[in-house]
Image (cartoon, rainbow, N blue to C red; front, side, top):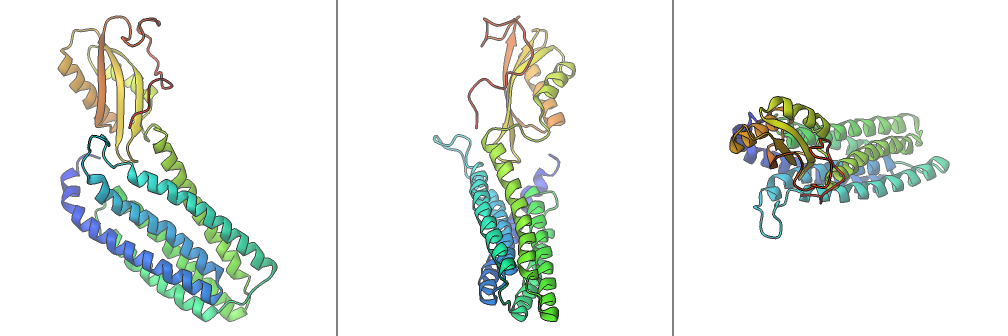
Length: 315
């Protein structure tokens, strides 16, 4: 995960341009689809516009991740702005839940009392939406394959593309058979996709905001691995792992050593193992010598376990 840093740095301007173009395409057509769905009386188009809103927000967050998070840290924000996209994602997820509730309410009402739907208008808008999503997906797919922002944004746009295909099929059914309940039925299916996306966004954003351990970083595994991989290390404890964003894991820990290894060499080796085995580059270490932790002299000497419920949250 660390062998493409130079390549990604060189690709950043191109990635930003591609993301911005896809964002403008998706966001612009989202508005067109919402207005068109309202004029055509198609709840399915409005629901698909809500689905496009999730992807517009994802593209915007990815673009902001390139722009805002590069701002330097200052005295008030010592970790910089890496949490900004996470906060925006959390708010976006809450808004999506409200939209899903409204779509479900409207869909049930239309199933009980069917309303006319302009199948021709619905079909035309859905076809244009399909073309827009194809262009947006091509833009993102042509970007850096190693960048998680670009890959994630492409997956979201692919979901929009499938939603447009569904709207085309529903419009075809209405034009051929006149069976309008297909419109609210499809809107419910799309609402489920939006609900799923909102749930994942809220779950991941909440995990980061609550200082949850990053994926692949298990404190108990670190307790087991480090003493066997680092000469002179007796045990590690007070392990706290969190992330500024989903892609920037950080850690602090106490390491008890026997004093046979030089301090700087010990620190370097611990950091190297954490980077190679767990992908954590930013680590704050407290090296301890002797029988007990200096923060808890009144406790059992040399106790190993991670006291994850203690200490202030970081980040």
